[in-house]
Image (cartoon, rainbow, N blue to C red; front, side, top):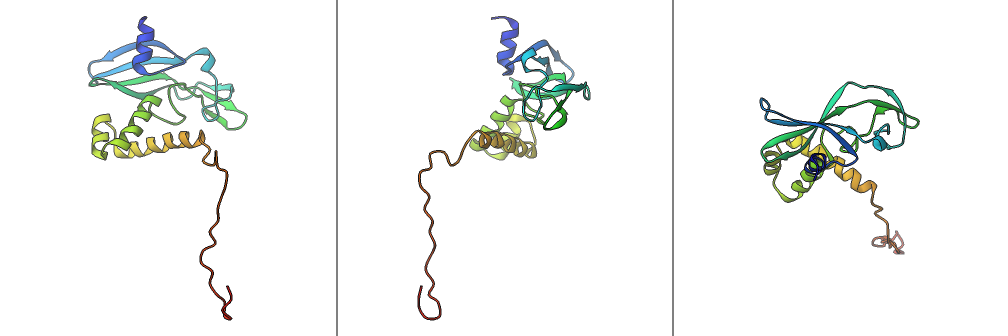
Length: 173
């Protein structure tokens, strides 16, 4: 297995080019410098459509990834903006994270699952995040689940209960 493939699997990223991985001893942090693959570049962060480039954005940005043992991991990449026909000027989509999220898909999904299985204090200590962050992650993950699910799929019949009949003044229902 090549180093790039190994790092891709460890970081849980797809459609991503890993440029470099460094360990910052002072911060006890692994920093993976990445960029979207050529096919994943230049897409609207909201709808995912190909969009014209607008500018370089605010420079490099970091996304929290799943820890490697006891060491925190972040992905670092440029955050250019694109001009979408529907959404206007927005930060370009990245294949490893949701729009406006500071965490990778793998991190978000792990936190959301843990929140269904463990106590609040356990999730916050294990993932090293604030409870407020857990709530924001759950909201993002649930929005994705709802967007991909039709709650009425397979529905064949709806029954309506009109409730008890209340007689009028003359005693008629």
